[in-house]
Image 1 (cartoon, rainbow, N blue to C red):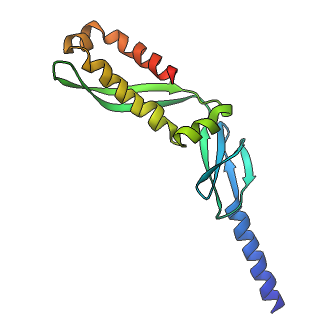
Image 2 (image 1 turned 45 degrees about the horizontal axis):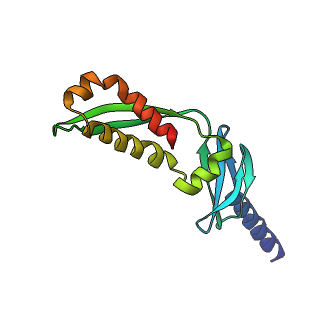
Image 3 (image 1 turned 90 degrees about the vertical axis):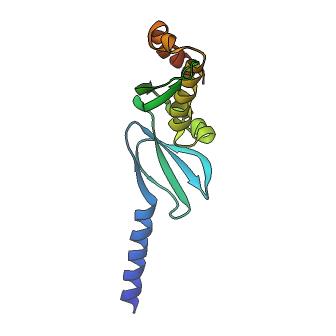
Length: 153
């Protein structure tokens, strides 16, 4: 009986250790949640331990990344809807600001700060201009307007 108890205890210890051990890849920062609440602690790349079943983590990229916003509709002032096939946004999140960004926008911050913002700003631009202006006269200004707006936030 003692041998079975020790084997069971060792098995339980291995299971708990495997549930608590996690890895943060190079170029990422780990953010932690306990009971759904974001914890203040972040972690650097490497292996780390957390309280199993109570604490979860998300890995947030802090290296240069390119987000592609695809098939963006754009309604002009004349009522014509055109589509931009692909818009690429290159961004870099600093490790120091990762916690605050996740706190304010979630670990999927690029959905709010990039994808939704690109859709909104492009529609704002197009709705104030004619098809001629969007496609020909002011086409070269679209990326500068998007860049300026994205950098403000």
